[in-house]
Image 1 (cartoon, rainbow, N blue to C red):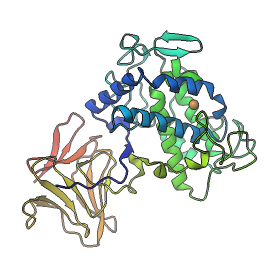
Image 2: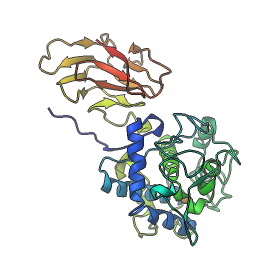
Image 3: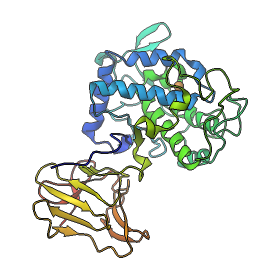
Image 4: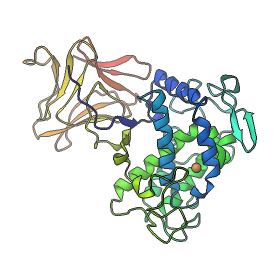
Length: 388
Ligand SMILES: [Cu+2]
């Protein structure tokens, strides 16, 4: 059976919706990278302080975390960076936070997988071999969703004097030079410990989850403001103009990394621009007509036909569906798996044709099982809804 190739093999997902095994796999992969390339990122970030407090802050960090993702993919070709949406669960612990022992570890010193005894030695100026430190919430709160929305309303991208005083400036508002919430800086300070020393902060592996989220927010802003491009192109500080090449490699140029889709990755929140299909739907996924989900074995398939009709079939018998959603009247719409856990089918007029009615069960996933069911699995991998 042929399964459709995803147009974007690299989808960066919200860590909150990753299953236990996926969280552990990512944490162990990062721990493994400590033996080879990881420390290069700590040292490079520490040295290149000129990319903070200026327009290149966002493109430089985009390329920086992209390179780590590329390196991780040499160890596991399916790896992508998770992102930490800190507005989602602003507590210090809980299953939607990254602070679980099978993932980023907890508060304080030396917890979880990233401990000295497991080989996670922090590098500070001239001093190696210190334990990872955190002190949650000691100096500030995490940003709220409203504060991020306020940030997304800021234009232009940046302006003179192109530094931490620039205003109005989306970049400076997001980075944390201005605005009531100091978004990017506040998250570093909230985590505390190693993250609070911004230059050596990649010592804490949550750095990359935080910066993936900052990068995601930049991407959303770019999509919302298509006429606002990267500035300055000339006349800005050295290294911060669009054609300038990014250090330390001297490539690519800033203008080469302003389009994440051209770089070949997207975030799960970038839907519905991703043609979906394949084996299942994850929280936030949107399926467009003309795509099919397949069971891993057994030959069952969920067809979302081009006319918007949704049906579950035994692949050997396409004449009669095992189960079918209510008939589409107004034309094809979308199938949406809401992060809050509901599967909803819409028609072209956004009229809801069908719902699983499973809201407030955050993180459900949809699969076609090998027994021929369409089933929603909760985060404990239990079936909580199925048809027929
Ligand atoms: Cu940085």
